[in-house]
Structures are given as structure tokens and as C-alpha cells.
Amino acid sequence: MVMQYLISRNEEYLRHIEKFNVQMAEIVELIKVLEYNISGMQKQLQEFSTESDTQKKEIWFGKQQKEI
Image 1 (tube, one colour):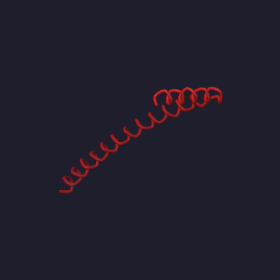
Image 2 (cartoon, one colour; image 1 turned 90 degrees about the vertical axis):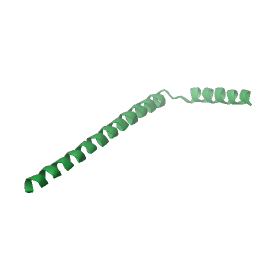
Image 3 (cartoon, one colour; image 1 turned 120 degrees about the vertical axis):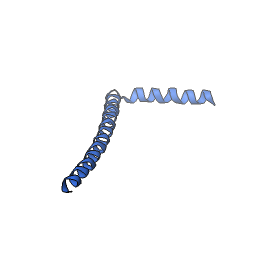
Image 4 (tube, one colour; image 1 turned 30 degrees about the vertical axis):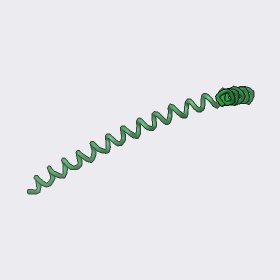
């Protein structure tokens, strides 16, 4: 009787561990996406200059005026 209880509890724990492993894999995937986005932002910020920003704004506003 005790053995049957331990076996059933073991199966329950194995299901919980599997669920935990799936959740951890999802978290790791989200962290990888976040890391990729952060490195992209860092690259953009390193290349940032006020002159190029002003030019980009002028081009964007020019396009908006043409669309209207």
C-alpha cells in the first residue's frame, strides 16, 4: 500500500517536473529574444548622432506631408 502511494506520488512529481521544464524552456526563449532586442538597441544607440536624427525626422515629416 505504501509502495503504491509512493509510485503514484512519483508520477505526479514527474508530471510537475515536466511542466516546470517546459516553462523554463519558454522563459529561456523569452530571455533570448530580450537579449537580441537589447543588443539591437545598443547598436542603434552607439550609431546615434543628432545630425542623423534630425535628417531622419525631416525625411519622416516630409513623407507625412506628401501623404496628406
